[in-house]
Every structure is written in structure tokens, then in C-alpha cells.
Image (cartoon, rainbow, N blue to C red; front, side, top):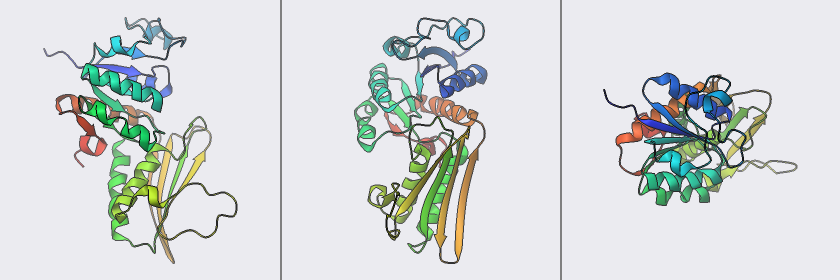
Length: 269
């Protein structure tokens, strides 16, 4: 019997980290071989199963990603931009697939992934769900079909713990809309409205961020013109969709050449 590919989860104590751990363990298609947390975290040095409230599973949470990655074929990373950049270098040295679900990365930080992608597969996406990636393609097609008489606004809602805005998914949708119109999002992005801002500039792509309660994730792409509106919508009610998508990406990347990919590649879209 072929050995299942080994996967390491970074940011193991977080909500997504724990969801990823549970998804990998239940999958039957991969084996959890490591869990990483930041130096000084209360989980470091303890059995992962026990700190998650269950029985011991023989995996000790570590703050040493080099050791953890050396045992794996892939690492799934939903942490923070600075940590993700550090992990990308280590993953490249270990020649393991690096699946990145980290949001809030700047263009400069994303550019810093390029050296690592020469040596390892990187799959990075603002959202790992099938539905959102279909929405991304639809957004690009609708934006391409409509002219600037239709204003584009991306409205996103998340739980009150989320620290970045607009969300990575909202920015991914904005990039898709900009691509459909043949422009750069950086040239038409409008996400800082407050006070007397003046009339909306024609051709801009606007962003509105809502934070509250335990909202998992809701994204609307609004195309508004005089007399009519088109709304494309995705609502997530279970974080498991992101974990399952990330696992799918990790397994997909195992036989691919080094480079940077996204979920559209994984899903063949």
C-alpha cells in the first residue's frame, strides 16, 4: 500500500488550523505529520491531540518549522504575512508544496514569494472554496461584458475577529473584475471612503467591509447602472469548505513543477 502524503499545519491553534487538522485526519487521503505554532505559544511541546481536547495522537506541537517540514510532502498555512514569508523559504528548501491561505498580504509581500516558487510548488488563494472560485470566473466574465456605465462594488462581511479589510476574497474578486475590464486593480481601487469624498469616479471598483458576530464569509459583487443592478453572491456557512479546498490544493500540487498556482489551476478553471 502506498504511504499517504504527509502534511504539516502551521498556526495549529487557530480556528482554521484546528479545522485543517480535523479535515486532514478525517480525509483518508493524507496523513497529518506535524503541527507548528509560534515560539512561546502555550501549545508548543505538548501533544496536539491533548491540547485540542482529545486523546494523545503522538504529534508534538513544535515551534521549529524546519524539523516539521522535513517530515512532510506539503504544508498548509493560514497564518500571517510575515510568518508565511518565513515558511515559504523553509518550504522551498525542503521542496514541499506550500499551500497559502493567508490573507492581508501586500503586493510587495506577494512578490517576495517568487524566489521560493523557483524551487517548490506554491498554491496561494484568497479563498479556497469551489464556489468562490466559480464566482471569481463569473465576475471576470460579467465585468468584461459590461462597460463603465456599470459601477462595480464588492461588499464583504466577516466575523468580528477578522483583522484585515478588505478580505483576501474581496480583493481576489476585485482583481477578477479589473482583469475583465483590462485594467489594474491598483489603478481603480476605491476602499477608503469616509467623510466628504466627492462623487464616485467612473470606472472605479469599490469595496465595502462589514465586520460583526460570527459571520463565516459573505461576498457580493454588485454591478450597478442607471435603472438596473446585477448581483453575484456567495455565502459560506461552514469553514470546512476552506479546509477541504486547501487539502485538495495540497494533494494536487504533489506532482506539479515548481511555480506559483492558484485555486483556479487546482480546479481546472
